[in-house]
Length: 391
Image (cartoon, one colour):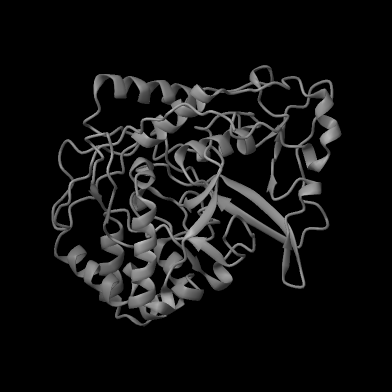
């Protein structure tokens, strides 16, 4: 078993507040850390930010196949803020036959790495193989507020799923269960579009390997170009590219990124909240959650407002067709809505150019809310959209 150094997630409790209140004048904005970090915690956050923004090279372990040479190349925005989404799309693929999904691992699946280091061995970018009949795109997710999500206890997630099944069985979510590599246990997972990652540490390790080609203690085996592992004999950096401290630093940075505080909500926005409630938006986009106990005073039992239940839901035609972890082809994790005002495109593949289009595009368990939205009087739709623009 690989020993991973302990990660202290640097998060600050978001105090529960009335929705009618605007963002506090000193509340963090996009890309900023939680306000109440100690000197040591802020130093650790900034160390991790250095790793997050550094550009890797083949000499430091980049590749031989990868998507980008730095974390910030995908996680940038709004503007120059670090940690958001610039709508960079990655490609997933596989093959479905007789209802069974094949990840095409022998051909490099399910993630296409669309860059390569070239060099004397002429490493080339991967292509979607002809055998694939499922091709999906996924948009870069924002990383804001993930330290609070990491602090949600398994019991709280399971209880939420139970309550949804009891109160609204037609839209009830499913708890995602995945292998936590560090502990070797199967546990509740809540990160990624398919809720396939169990912790910020594992989320960081997966991104290091699959997006940048950087091996690390949690993911020590290099990705084989187009599934051909014999090509790795020419890998210019065959050793471990990142160590446990590098993983911890990256997780500390992500854990310290505060969720953007919502903007002030007036009468129209307040009406929009009521509309969202009435058509069932909050059956999946849960407004308020509470973190579990923590040694960190800033996160201990903190109440926060992600507008997500972090559960898997059957989204019908809106699913991406990929089987990953415990998520089936039509299942996706409920996307949190905090920071929504900073997004330029919407839904997992960026197909929606507006929030209105995104709501209308909901299918499966989200189909009823979408239909109710479409049937609303224009004034009520406008109020709902006005509320969402404050998040």
